[in-house]
Amino acid sequence: MLSDTNNDYARSLGLVFTLPADLREVYRGFGVDLPALHGTDAWELPLPTRLVIDANGVIRNVETAPDYTKRPEPEATLEVLRGLG
Image (cartoon, rainbow, N blue to C red; front, side, top):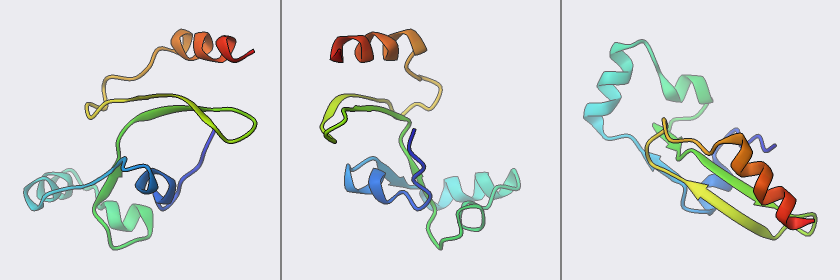
């Protein structure tokens, strides 16, 4: 598991997007202030992504989707992990 508090790793992989002004207002309307939550000045979010990285730091599998409701099934992740062994 990776904690990427400032989205630095996600940004290095091109997996971060900046929310446009109109969407920022929607978030604010729901009481969500991303910069305050993240302790930065940025209105950024990472794309939901599953990375499988081996013990040598090599990325073996990536699954990402711009739709946050589309997440990899746990069984799919286990299959990828089993394939590494």
